Image (tube, rainbow, N blue to C red; front, top):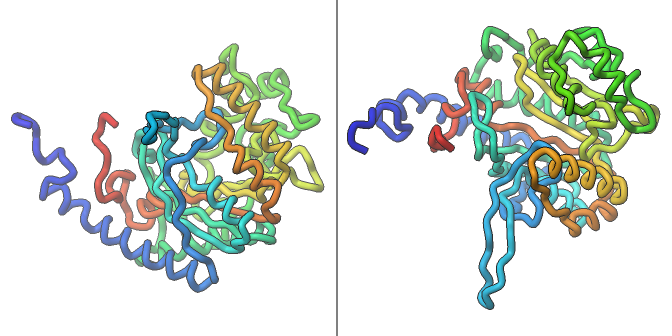
Length: 350
């Protein structure tokens, strides 16, 4: 490593000393969060990292590996993008309240807010509406802020009080307010009308010929909506269009939207939660559509986890949340980049 500036390495004494306060804050937050879940009666679980399927969302990419059996047979496995499949199998097995601080992996992701390997805090409640896990999310974020003693979060010139009553905003209201788009007017029979959304978004975002409804939705969300969220206080963005339901169930009183929400602070997405889908046929349909689109875009598809789909049919009604723990630590410690709050950040070329 001759000629390399040693201060650029995370393990150099100088750089480590600069990051040490953030790492100590991480330890405090970890203790506080574990104590909070223990007080609420949750069991901490540890689920496997190597999975038959890493998840079946179009734009999530997972590292893969190959297992070699004693007889010479080989089996492809993936590093999980979330512990969700395994946790829902535990719900099907009879667990009622579980959480995990899970190491997860995402290929093609690197930046101030993204790492290829990071910690996801996930928790699930059986027989509980998703309003309850929304409240959990707000409480966990406040718990982290209390652990470090920070009075407000700050990121890229935006601030948010983690202790204030959060703003609650539907996705449809957010699109109307920040982009002037009638989002629900572009949804019918569970599908998005690409032409109608493209016409409404024209002049607001750049639209490519091969962009589908979800692509246009994401562009408007990222460019016009997300930067306005979590300003002054946390924002709960809820009732996502059913086209973007993922593993969430449709809202019984309005099938155009799903029981899905996200929590934002300072324009940063911290958590993503669902009222969980328990219809295996519908879940299979969504996964298949997502993998067809992944094949079209990226030339690859991930297998379906048939055990997971069996578990979906047997699991109770439930709600769950995935929270980016490193992002939460970053905001609660006053760091400005996510790699400041992990003990061994990946190489910059990872």
